[in-house]
Length: 228
View 1 (cartoon, rainbow, N blue to C red):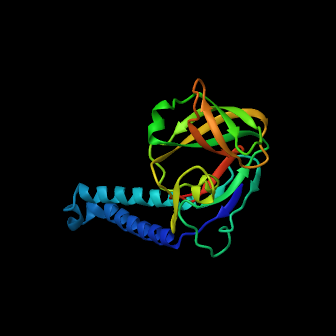
View 2: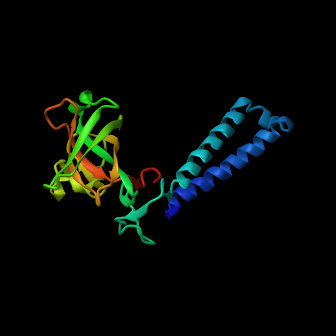
View 3: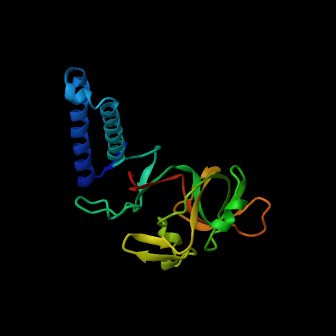
């Protein structure tokens, strides 16, 4: 199901220009056998055509990602005010959440020094903040290879009272030290929490808390970052 359609005039112009160049090079490549001046370009012309086709495909994929689609059945929650006609959306901005009826999925944020302790498939137990006494067992999933340029979880940002040190700039919340995202999967099978929660998670066998976590209930973060 389509949730929203975004538009980028710059991307649309780049795609139109790339398509025009691809058509021109395609015609020249097909006519090469009949024109001596084109024959002189040899294999270079075919390579240019191939590169132009790849650019069109790449820009087309970016264009397609401007259409936000729900990854599973659920309901839309916490719709951003940025999703209004004519609004300019910043790169990395959190637009909306899609919530499923059961189960939960988490995202943890760790520093570079903590990466060595993380192993895919390890058990992590999430405990919510605020005396809510809500806890669930999860499995450590994918760990980002690159540190985050922007924190897309305002709930955890220091400028909003959260535990992660960031600086609010025009382009978003910039971490003050290297920060990596960790997915927490298979978080229980019962009812999902009624709303987004913040808390901490402990790796199985660890005494200290390793993960400062932003909690998502079977949640898809749909955002525009080179696409969504």
